[in-house]
Length: 612
Ligand code: PEP
Ligand code: MG
Image (cartoon, rainbow, N blue to C red; front, side, top):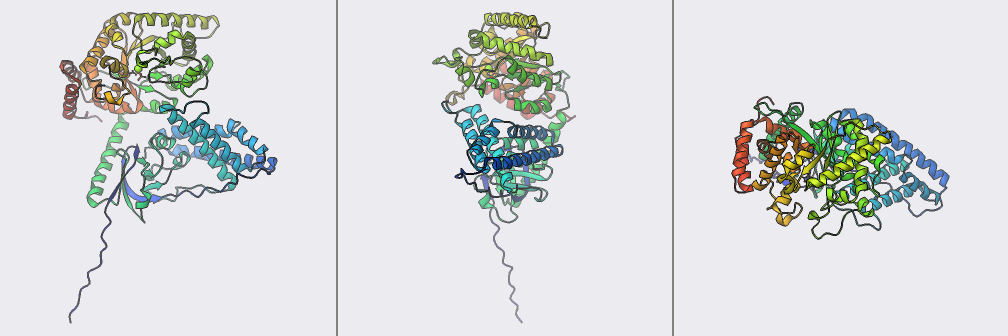
């Protein structure tokens, strides 16, 4: 008998698909997608005006109490999260709790209730009005750049607290991630910051969303939790079926749906390599910043906004080498007074627990803008070439009250720990002299008033960010207590290439030997006059550049906190002789490309130190 063998029907395996999103938290993960849809938002009747205000107020009060209790519970969960996550989420929860207190938001909602609105509608309209106010303040230009990022974040906070209140008013449940399987990749249209607080990084391998972006709270929180994450991966959900496998690369922003056997194997290698890299960088936090030949360097952090403080405290940085005080003036309606500024500096100094904090007085002008100062009639003189106009110390010497107020606030805050005061964009010693006179006068005034301030006054130093300051570094060093080299501006002014303009981006090269010569002259002058010198431009965050800068004579570096471990690893792999060789070859190079090529060759021949 003849048997016909029926071949088992095999459906073709669907091909792998790649979706690009925004990388927001580095790392690679492989796992099955778990889709977490958000329960539908309750419908809100915004037309009613006949509600009993007392009744609606009681309902609001109840929803506020429930919301506060939920935030307290979220807070209690924090101890389960990594340290960075605890700090980030803790401060966000605090913001929400403040909004629920006797705030402008609460007052606005209650006024609407007095007009007979139902509580849900009052909450929705008031939070939306405040969010809109943040995004487009009436009668003022819409915020741009960093200000726009901050405004979007603030608007998001209002909307988030509004949603929480409305859910509590209407008894609509929250989504929960606790039922997701271990090792799952969480996929959603959107993750809100408060949702991020519910993610357990030991159970969730990665997070991908279709909406969102790299600068919002959610992105910050995911980074703090250390979960690889890609946001704004448009079209991903449509690609997913039941038990769909994904590879998520939070470093490149790529999500691979149904990876082939070969892609999955390559991803597993990357997952293992990334885990090793994290372990190494984690260990580095506790190791000294020492060259392989034994010399110890100082690595500090730059601070741009207060939210970076927790990251700085945990980065292994030995203090703040550049506190850019511009944030104080950016989102403010008025110029903060002495006491208000002191209240900002003091906790930062305290948080650094004895490590020094270098506060730069406001560097307003050029590409940096401030509403508060513009309203007070300070700055923006309409120069055709603002980078060469009234900015930095020039502006402060024209508006002395501003400088006096800031000096006084810093001196008051200096009771909390070691502080240094720094002047931006100095181009002649006369500017330093005039600023020092004001500094001394402010000190005397405070003492007369009985305010306790350090004696002698904290060091007053200058940023070296113009060729003039570098060329006159010997003279400057006789009167400045310290130098900080700002290579961002120094490169711009040396090469006559705008740091913010894309059409001259190729000309803007901090490795240009002309810039390196000025760095070396500054370091030499500081050494001759025994003045501390550090470098705080972007170059100091570059693990390739730092050994070269050591060779040019620098021993102290201030950088973005996230760069501290990588820079530490780079310097632990080189000796002083290596650094000096790099520096002398760089100074002989004809252009920046030759220097970059030389550094790439050095880096390729370097081995990580054996003790990591
Ligand atoms: C610099 O110019 O290198 C610097 C650190 O200052 P800023 O980037 O704030 O101008
Ligand atoms: Mg500068």
